[in-house]
Image: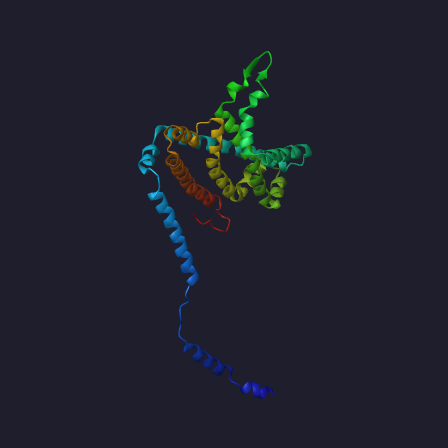
Length: 294
């Protein structure tokens, strides 16, 4: 039986199979679904573009107000508020994240309560509370030494900064905490073994390694903060959307002014995105996995 099987030639069978396959004609696959979906997308985009081009939009008005002084001032205030609130949020977030990892139960509870409250209430509500803080604390200071009226201190800028920055700190703390937890426990133990204090170990060893995990979501939060500043218009902060509203209340060119605001928001985001990608590549050095540019 074995002799019979050994006398069979598998090579000849494979040759016959190869010859049979070679006789078939190669036919390219027709991606019908791909062509249909592409045609639908092109038709939809063309329809939207034509609606904007031939709709009731005065494009010369868009061009005239694109570089208007009021719009540019609002843009500067938007960028200033986004940067200041994000810096405040990062400072609070790093502090709260370290508190969340503390072995002290009181400190841990305080940090967890802060995150619970500011993530659990709407940002718009927090802005309104800060703006109307004078209704709760008419004055603040040290009695007999100096006292100030709260309404003179909590300006729209200060209220927006506190509302946006403190709210951002709650979200940033969770991002930073996730980054700290991503670092191998051996790094903590190595720093402790050489006698390095905990805070110094966090600053010199742990945080630099955690930045590879922390930076991408923080970059997204910064881009989101640029758009969240528009909520400050409800407390009369002179950011871009607030100034746009003031203009179209007068000239009734609503859609044209909204297009101007959209162009500037997209421009700011387009500048921040490559900066974020470059920072990600910088902190990903030595990680063994390159970060693709966006």
